[in-house]
Length: 87
Image 1: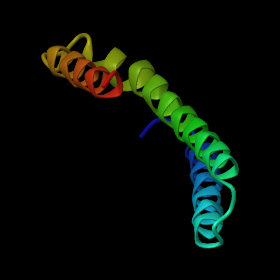
Image 2: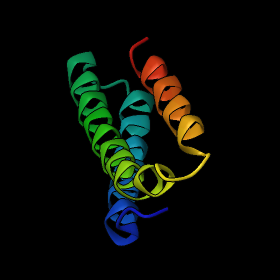
Image 3: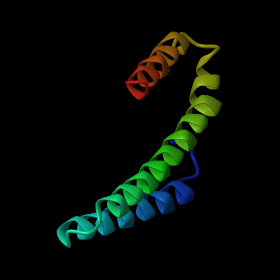
Image 4: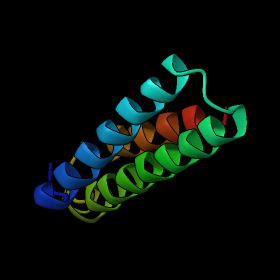
């Protein structure tokens, strides 16, 4: 992985902490809107992480493959991922 591992790790730990907090909120039968807001915040962090990883992938892995036979495979991988994201 070519993305900033320190930043990705920090963000993942933040998301994990938020998920633990959401689980506690559910167990404590907290207000639905508060839980939903925390879920949205966690999704935003996960989306940010995914964006950083994909940017790094495009910048390094895909660029490097453009002069090789792997370029078609790399493009197919990205297209498959985009299809998953758009569901």
